[in-house]
Image 1 (tube, rainbow, N blue to C red):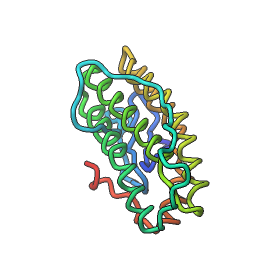
Image 2 (image 1 turned 45 degrees about the vertical axis):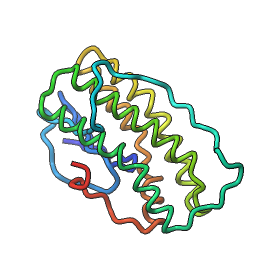
Image 3 (image 1 turned 90 degrees about the horizontal axis):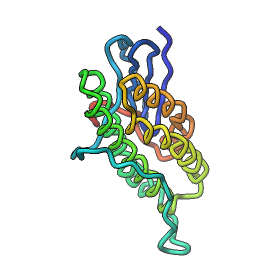
Image 4 (image 1 turned 30 degrees about the vertical axis):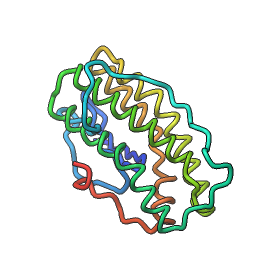
Length: 196
């Protein structure tokens, strides 16, 4: 069965089929997944009764010209920024794979959208070292493109429609940018257990 991989400092693998498997977060997970029974994703903690859906508007920088972070500071900041998104993706994945009702999946997708929005804002508001500014900009651009699909997934009326939007979001995983960022910041490959 063909496999497409996805990251938004989350690596997502998507398997085509009746149901989809999306396993997100940076790094590479090579576990085979049965596309007829699983989908991979996740979400932050509290679930609201109705998904809260907003568009992403990067906030202006509070300080006109803050000093860039050191590479060590940037590595810690980056991991802190992407962690909530990676957790949200893993929880959505578990909900889809667990056959949770569409209402639960919508809440999880809304949580991914919220985490993605926050991630974009925090990536924008950080004074990155010059070496990582390009790849961070690429990751933000892909995350902005994916956001529309996360919002549509959060409003999907049917499971298939929700999964289709997850697949659409996966097309904007930012994997090349994430790989560059992690290499430049000397970060280890993603371990799915860190976010489960």
